[in-house]
Length: 332
Image (cartoon, rainbow, N blue to C red; front, top):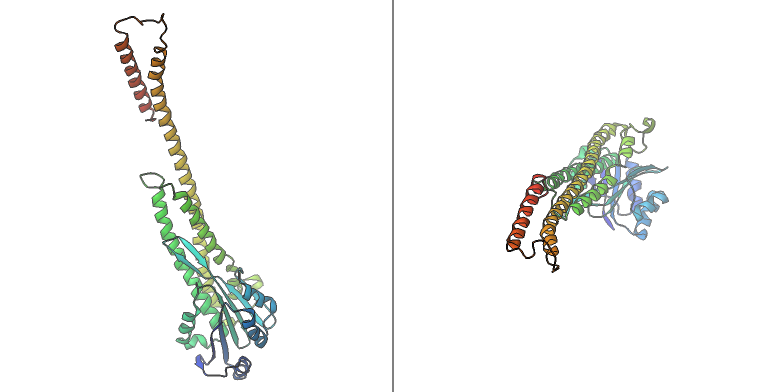
């Protein structure tokens, strides 16, 4: 569905024809105007008119309709196509979800296609409409604003993940030792969420480097003003910090998982030692009582008056001796 369609001239939203072809023709005649169409999960039929009027490449259109794309930047003859993956994090469930934003930029037009609820572009459009200076840069300003908003949210999500990971680390290394029996599954789930976050931030580095003019051979990207390169370098710097943070989180959660498993192994060994020690202590009186319970006629001290109290004292002495031995070695 078409969420919004507007013409912007000299940094201001202007009234224009409703027909897309007429709107585009008016913008190209004006020279400093462009049309921005925003779509949300469009069907193929809904997208056909936009494709025909703006001459979008069929491969890019297919990507925009099917979604499930990695962040990328592709240059076609008549347009530029960029894919970004906004993310959202729910701290209560430790769950990272991602959506997709596709941006088509060409001569006097911008087409944005959104999949998922993670990146409402309405807020970006309102912010741009309140900043005419940014809108005067045309489609380049729109591309910058959307990229900046998504990467800035990456920074927030990375901070929330770091905070929750510190809590998880404190749980694992608490004095009680190793957390609960659900801790391992929680750590593993946390690692999967970091991987989901990494899928959004990692591949975006190369497209931003190209937009910043620091990519392969420093070639200029068409339909993007060279004056915008410093701004895209600033976004790329933020993304680099996010990627470094994500790598650190991934290593740390792996170390926490290894430490937790080691603690669980040590705890199991301690439990086995305690069980073995108590079993050994129970075996001694059982063996003695079993031997003297066989009721043979010819057994030592069987007819002796003090046999019973002597055996009880002997078993008690052996139990005390074994207890002190196991206790001194840390088995009990």
